[in-house]
Image 1 (tube, rainbow, N blue to C red):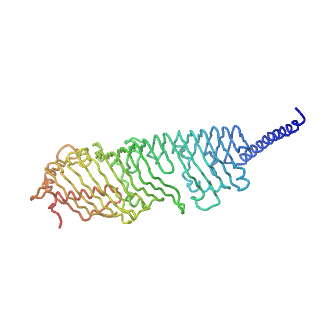
Image 2 (image 1 turned 90 degrees about the vertical axis):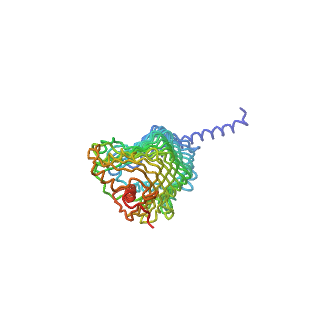
Length: 522
């Protein structure tokens, strides 16, 4: 090599060597600082890892085989146990950190996370939230967070029973900014896009019911759920044995649920809100069983308007469609007899304005269904959530109905055998949370009521004859096609459900139509 090129070559080689050496030193210093920061974490947080690799020039940090254990502040027992294959922080901006005192990262990638968390119900969610924000000292910005192929388990701190299980979980969060220096949760936590996908989700709704879903997809503006089910985790007999007061036994399945036009978050007052333009439930099927031999639940049962009005968050569901639904209600009253059953199939339901945001606008429910396999039932129901008297109107139109279809219910539960046909039944119930008025008209032929003895099999001739002397056997009395029933004041039992209130009204209307003069009021 000539003297002319030898000197620049030495300079270049020196620069390269110094750069490599400097890079090595800076990476080593950075790794030591990270290790020191981890070592200086509170005693309640234990972190272990296989290695830390840094690239000072690219701003990349990779932690291999990290393991985190977090202990409860009061109990000193492990409440979080998490481990992952790798955690990668890519393109960390030193300029933002040095000049603007902001931690700015292009991407955080968490691969194959396995996390077990023990939830303590005594500690309120607000405490977790406050603790999380308080522990952040600087503004943190992350362009993208990817959590891939994760397995998350949440269990109860005291009982160790599973609360949430998600064996396959993926999360993608974009443009996250955490700013502890501003007021209001809405301003402290910001992001642009969010998506979560969970397979084989299991969630313990209560001590008695479990929710499962084969797929749960959640994003900024939509929720898609497939093969959802809510089931009581005990058999009917065992359930009745452990209950202190009566409670429904559930077996519900829904093929698919879609939320469209979803908007959620926190408003300026830090109140959570949930808004959706349209929710569709495809092919829901439910069997609801009530054992009336269990002690009565005498707690107050609020109307749906009151429940919506008293929610601790803001809700606005503009329309809900239920397609091809099916509900079976079973009620066991006598130990000797099987539970009576009422079936509603081919259900098409439209609910409009299920909301406590637009609370002055009426909530409307329109139901078209088949009752007991071959009778058409139409219902129109409305109420105004803002009305604190819980005023409502409930209209129904029942088509041709052979009343002996109710034998399996009326014989088991009422010791009554019904015969005959209802050609058409209309009724309107208008009322509030205290009482109501029912107006009913019906046409029917050859109606007969048979009162059974206690064994539910033999006819009580005396009572049957007495009842049928009072009950008109058809609606064509004195040339009238319809018979009319009216009760001006039906008192509500507030320890019973809204559907019990509807039944009380229907019963009073039927009794007046069949046993009274049957004429229409002026």
